[in-house]
Amino acid sequence: MVIILRDNPAQKQIDTLVSWLKEKNLDVHIVKGAGQTIIGLIGDTSKVDMDSIKTMDIVEDVKRIQEPYKNVNRKFHPDDTIVAVVPGVKIGGGNFQVMAGPCSVESLDQVLEIARSVKASGAGILRGGAFKPRTSPYAFQGLGAKGLDILKAAKKETGMPVVSEIMDISKLSLFEDVDIIQVGARNMQNYELLKELGRTHKPILLKRGLSSTIQELLMSAEYIMAGGNSQIILCERGIRTFETATRNTLDISAVPLLKELTHLPVIVDPSHGTGNARLVKPMAMAAVAAGADGLMIEVHNDPVHALCDGAQSLTLEAFGSLMESIAKILPFAYKR
Image (cartoon, helix red, strand yellow):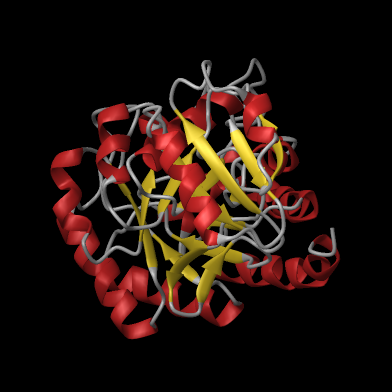
């Protein structure tokens, strides 16, 4: 349930209303937007008399939220959430960012070369996998903690904040200097991990599961927000369908739909979404046109010899070309 207050309500009246609501064992969240103040209620609101609340002088309207996700619901929080990664780097609410880098961290020289290049092309965040969930137990699993150290070194030299994927709760302490913690598609419904990340104050990049619905993605985000962490970035990265021509089916329609349903920023990963480097550029541009708040692009200085996902990785030159194309359409996309 949400209670929409009239303009400029008296603080004493708000306090009285909040105290009354808390007496009914409800969690009360006050959201002050640009033009409205909303009180969101979480808990058993079935016994709350909506008509009684509507008669209060400071109340403009009362609405019940039917969806099972409350905190991430745009009805609960009408204004876009802006995730502040580091000073000067924001995502959402008109702030567009591109995360770029190798699927897997392979060496310091490799990451530094890629980081310098993607930054020069306009990327704001360096991505790189230190721990890699692979379908085959015999495939390269990443460098682990050493890979995180390499990312930190690249961050120190270039000034770029970094994003990397966490695999399980036991590794959380290793991510202290990682600016955005990524929850991969396979871990989207690892609820114990989501609960723990909800207790942190770091931005979380939550990827949609391989076979997950949009509601399931939002419910996973709800787990994080329920723990107190609202710094969440949603990522559409393609879902598994009957189509075999591409690695996954990139659901571009998820972008405008998510923007309607939630206040959280939404980015798109066309690299995993297609699995084909030739398709990354057109799908990235489609994502921008659809209203995405950012992109996650895999870039490698030698894709042919990449230890992981070389087929979907852009060369340094191809990434530069992509950024030039995005720059041409981004101003029009953000006039929506």
